[in-house]
Image (cartoon, helix red, strand yellow):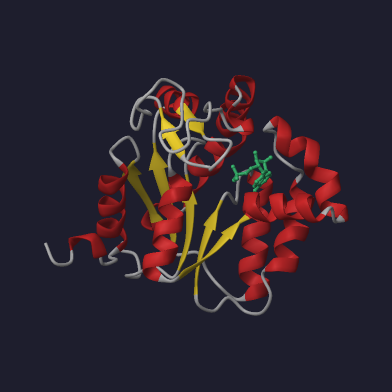
Length: 230
Ligand code: AMP
């Protein structure tokens, strides 16, 4: 069976390091999807130091998941009104408990996810990508030791500052996040792959980001604006 083209409500899945969040950002900018990112909502709550933020701060630092009821409360207060417009869920659902939360939200808010999109990448490739990331602490420029290395080793091309890893790219956090994905989120992917195969799509996340975007547009029936004018 085919998808409604283009799909209006999408869930994007991918292990940490798959590039799913950059892809989600691009889909949002080019195609008008509203991003619903639980990770970002949680980080904002931590910065505001509201009660929910205080509760989850240490879990976020460790790379472990926050409890399902917290995610339910977060979405309840964020998803107001009926589900109109295009929504792209990034980072939710991550557990089987959250699948039930999504199903309840679909009923109470009157929308239906019409595509589950998996950005597929092996654990090894994801770890390699994440361990290679570097950021300049002065200007925020980003580098990758394999794909986008600085000219001088571990030094920012723009201001000469010594490059650092992002805090959540510490090795033990990377490993923890991969383990959490394998244990809690892979069963969610299996669930949708078997229960909703007509709405399930998979793209190869090991390609260069341009190719992943192009494949995604093709699969979802969206126009690939980078092809315009070629
Ligand atoms: P992300 O930016 O999606 O990688 O999320 C960053 C962190 O926020 C994760 O490592 C978790 O600690 C937490 N988090 C984000 N979304 C969820 C979710 N749906 N369920 C549980 N924890 C989450």
